[in-house]
Amino acid sequence: MGLLAAICRWRPGRLAGELVTALCDFNVGLFAAVAGFLMCGGKGDVGWLAYIGKRAKRLLPTYFIWSAIFIMATIAFDLLLDGGHLNPKYGTAGFWGRVVFVGDAATHLWFLACLFYAQAVLHSAFKAGAGKWHGLMWIGLGGLAIGVSVLLADWFGKYPLRLVAFLMTGYGFRCCLRSGMHDVCKRHNGMFWCLAISALVLHVLLRGFVPGFIRDWFVVGPVMLAFIGCDFKSARWVKMAALLGATSLGVYLVHPLITRGLSVAVVRFWPSPYSAAVVLGEWVLAWCVSFAFVNLLRRMPVAGRFV
Image (cartoon, rainbow, N blue to C red; front, top):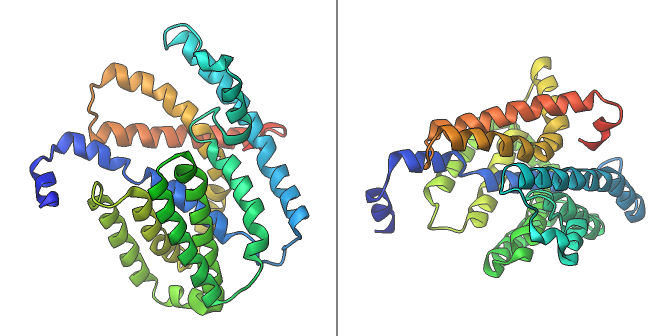
């Protein structure tokens, strides 16, 4: 009955605009699961201190540089576009503490801070076993953690615990793949793609009925398995995949600046609620501009190491 009522209240223009961004949180969970998938277990395994040193060298300078960039950009927007005065939070010690430790300089920097903490905690635990049953254990723990994150419904549940849940899940899938599942994914790649697409459709249809993070967790496995089973034989596809992988973090870091700038034009020329064409158009344009900007930064010796 709830689904029928939702259909009766359906407003095509508004709903279509909202559905374009229905998977945004899922993308964050997928990013975290991929990070977990790539943790430990390879030929380059190192001890805990060496691993933390490598992660600190990769994540922390980038985190602090972009925190400073977003603080300056936010101040500029406050002074030029949002009333001409600074937000009072800049005068509080609590705000600056959150900027340093939990990514409060921007809405998305929590991911870098929490990723560093989570990888520091989980690195040794992930090295404690291997095999299919070990992987299934971590997938199960990931599901338990995502359930707890929904129950908590606070900052800890929404950000660090959710990220830990997807790290566990991604690592669990890696363990399972090592025990022969990778060959299964390759042989039945079409079936896994059908499963992934069906799961994504259900993810969208169940909005309002099942908590978003739980839907994300159930979908992330089929999507990862579908991509893992792909056999990219063309050198062009391999090169494109490598480029997208090399720029993914940079695009993630840059895109809020681009979307904030584009939003000024969107608000001026289109009334809300926004149609799917407006939302999708801004989304694609923001990605293209962010991708081009990141590739430009990567060509600069100094800036390139921070994207």
